[in-house]
Figure (cartoon, rainbow, N blue to C red):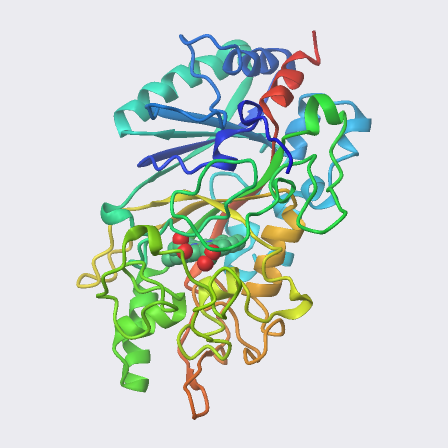
Length: 457
Ligand code: HEM
């Protein structure tokens, strides 16, 4: 097993910070030399300026964490040599705007509708992520960071996106979130342990054997100084139509006679309190310790020999959001159920939604970070093949992810398998999640940021 130098890896690749506030600065490099000085300052070890957070285990949780990613336009603006720029994977070079159609960012989700000037990808160069234990700390760190990246007109602040945890750690749509994450070999223990094989380090970090046997993803050049221990993130501003979602639950309940909470559980794969359908198919009110919320599979496996055999999806529908996004050991095309895992970070934005007072006109959503060694094989694959197509698993027919997929067609359906009967077809879905902005970033290692800070000296 590869040893991972955790001090060299950006912290959020390997660990959940579990902090209630997040700010994402969208930055444009204006002058590469001062920009390099700012980068140098955040990895200098000087405690009087905010420092980048690595994955080094901490004994006391810090007040805040800082991380940074660069788009290909940003690396170009930092004047990386062409030999290095050309060594990055094509989907990253093209960036989120040009890859929009591939991931289903079309019609209302197309870049023409994005905010925060994220569609002007010539000027989207770096994303600076600040996670904080309180809004006040966030403001203080932001002021210190702004002083740093404004100095010498290093960076221009293109826009800022803020997010804040909702009471009870729920995401909009009312589900408790944050249980399932891959456990990475050589990384930190999972917050909620699971029963799946550990993900090889090379599924999330450049320079290690990947999830495909005998294959390591190519490392951008210069590998030793810049590429190794780096990763990639798809940043997404995802607007959620809470009115539409609640109206669908009501109409689906009227169509079927099922309790709206059961419909909510069937389309996600977890009850809104987070209890997985695979473990509790009939009621969310079960005595399940929190550290067991991730201890399930959809078929019996050597790790979970007593798992209920739910290959037909009578408990958790095959098309439910979490089963599409992580089919675990259930049958999927190419037998690739455990090869498309993704690290999820982020927080909701907008105030809590009250279904008793719909139509308040306030935008709500999720600032989502989807991390993996390959944007193409992980994030893009999940969006294009598993969220927006139905051919990868038996029984899905032409359906899409009910939470995430583009269900704007009036023919859109969700299939609810029922033992001994034809599946129930739920209609009346719509596109509940729309993209309002995106960027693909390279997440250099700590050493990689030092390299970027020195290429002009
Ligand atoms: C606003 C948009 C989204 C909402 C409301 C949402 C909601 C949820 C919820 C409630 C869970 C269950 C909590 C858990 O298992 O920890 C979950 C899990 C998950 N979601 Fe999403 N999600 C969204 C976007 C996405 C996107 C864009 C992706 C991938 C590109 C994704 C991939 C996953 C994965 C991989 C899991 C864990 C599944 C597992 O391991 O069992 N989600 N999501």
